[in-house]
Length: 196
Length: 272
Image (cartoon, rainbow over all chains, first blue to last red; front, side, top):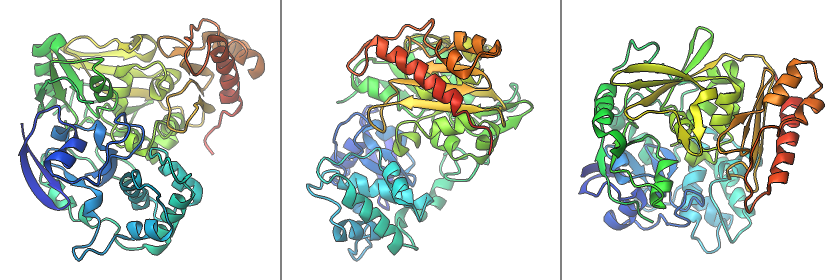
């Protein structure tokens, strides 16, 4: 099946098998190998990427489900001149990694937190990272890194997702307000009347 | 691990989806967020011939007050539920429980409809909707029917969805300020419940205590008869049939059911 996915700002068209997982699409078709396959069972979070601006576990998404969507991987975080994003810089400054395997997923999950909670406390950081396992650090430095990034950041954490919103709109996606306090679109199904 | 090969269809409208499901019969399987289905497909525990991806169908996502009930579109994600101020006011148990599922990434994909239809006996939302005495609207090309949660969960990973039917909406009574509580016992933060108890307005539902989620009817009857929370909760494992596994044997699960029920009732919180 032909899919069109905007990965880290550039739109690709690829012919994929329906059963191809998004993580394999990113690693093997798009050749972006920062995103790791860890547990492959939706547990460890090493495969976390942003799908239309929100962190998801790409081992449990089909590439065809991302058709028409925007995906951001760790490779898409740095500025065009190569400057790391504040979150990446904070992970380095706070030594938020040892072996590095979980790091791409940790960074993507942490950015997802700051997008809707720019000033989290330590508990909120730990809860936001509950879907990401690190087998080296004991998490303390990771949490410090996220708190440091929150402190350092008031501006854009995620340039590619903010620029993608207009693109999303003209695609065939349904009304999916991403983070409204409430969902604007009421369910159309009340008593069999307003179904599309 | 890779799922077995399948055909993939992405209908553009609900009617098209219902037509497809009618044509496909047992060969078709509905894909929404995929966070129950894809893991078991990857493990080759199931291998549907055709996936009908309803994930982008319009009109099936959102939370709306409708009379005495709150209507929730089947494609409403756990993250939508847990961040909905409207739901937190109208049905606080459901908003709270949605935020307790797995982890943020999973909550960004998983849908309430998928969770209910999948009918995992250890899952959070089935227990919550059962405790709320909610109902489900199932639509097919032939029409629509409404099924109460009390009769929806029919067996292990089995629910009362007939071939060609699609769960389109979940309806729960507006519980408002009624006392509620949710207790979930897990070994690790993002695990499935070993046992969970959901309590609201004198009703209690348990997860992890049988092949389906189920109501603690003995506890409910005792409460209705004026028993203390402690005495009523001591009956919570009556009529349950828990399994034993590496996490807990049967007697420990029964203990958890009684304990968590008492805490859910004790800690039952009304609207602040």
